[in-house]
Image 1 (cartoon, rainbow, N blue to C red):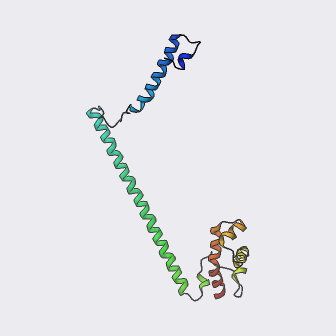
Image 2: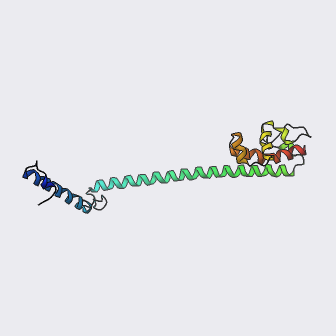
Image 3: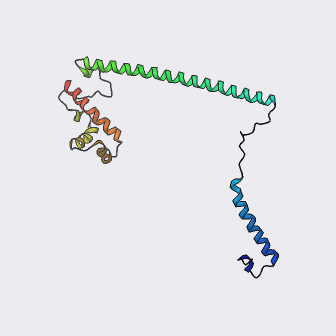
Length: 174
């Protein structure tokens, strides 16, 4: 056997053969390792006694009961929230209809829409905090550009711009 391991001069013949055997066993282990099947714990039935099987069955039944109770509770909570949401939507619709049918909308506007403007004042003068937003919007900038320029959230800028026509209409009608 003229191999690299056998050409090493400082090893005695026993050490050379031990290295060859170790290398061979390593190769065999690496080749045979993928063929070793892993055991599936569910493949073979467990050797539980009848009492053990009954205990597992009882635990599973309790778990199913708990899951059913939890699902009922969650359904009830969702139903309650849905009813509350429907009531709020109905109330909002009624208020919108009342605002549309009312001749002087200013008297029943919600507090977040009411302004303290005199009859001749514009919406721009109604809230000086928003004047800069209105000026930039009038200059043709988008809500995103205004938000970046003023370092404010884009949603806030969009809300200010969406409320602007309502404020102008409310101020003009009063």
